[in-house]
Length: 357
Image 1 (cartoon, one colour):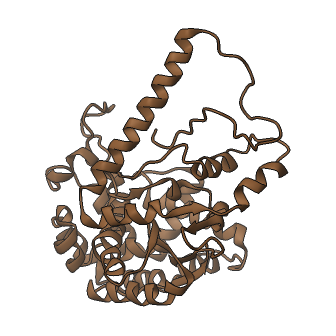
Image 2 (image 1 turned 180 degrees about the vertical axis):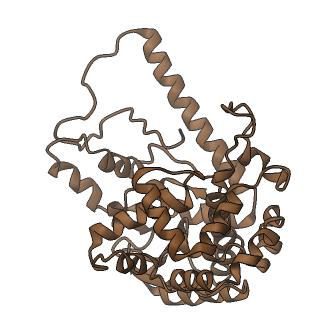
């Protein structure tokens, strides 16, 4: 709901077809309803920003960095090149440029930080600039295979006990599996950023085929990481292949997904959300625990460890979950500090790429 785009007027310099109906709104009640919605949306955004910025000092500092972000002149100039403006991706990017909407919030599920930049289409990030650097595109530091990486390391004792205490009861559940040879292979492939290529080779696919890789990635998420305990069709076939290659990893994920609030009482709102009705008395949403654990692991590392370190060293940056965007002159130091943070957490250092945003 926080990402809904509201547009109240067409820009003065805009030319071309409008994606919204050009009609006169004459009914007084309708005009008032539109204005109430706009005012409520702005108030909710202001509350989000205030609440998150007061939670931790690091969020307050990140908000300052976020307010230093602007679009370069490339986006306004693109408006004239669109024959029709029903391209929602363009409108989303344009809306941020005009500050037509703004939010800054964390979610209860994965504790991730959400801003308009995190939901912005990737192709428009190249137009982002820090104020004072209008001609300098940002660099992006990305953890390769980031979600698989966190799925391979989220049961590290030091990470759980110091940063994710709500999951401590799962350490005993996971420990027998994390010592198995296939789990160690899975962990190494995730750390090296080669998991998808390994799976593709096992299936006889060309590991340089980007389209096939994207499909394998989607199947891995829908069949293994984010799936319910039972899946069907293509997802079922993919999971069986994964179970055969990594039996201990599969068993660990299934064991976590079968936990309940008696084992994890502080996660009751995730396992059995209040007000939600189930067909069977023993049904719940525990299958989401693997995804919850991955996202909270990522957030703990990024906002409790990495972000404070970058701020301490005077680096100005914004985040897109596990990705960091900063000025080119700061990219090498940011990568070095990122790797140091993983080592300090007793986590294997992942593969980190540096590319233009």
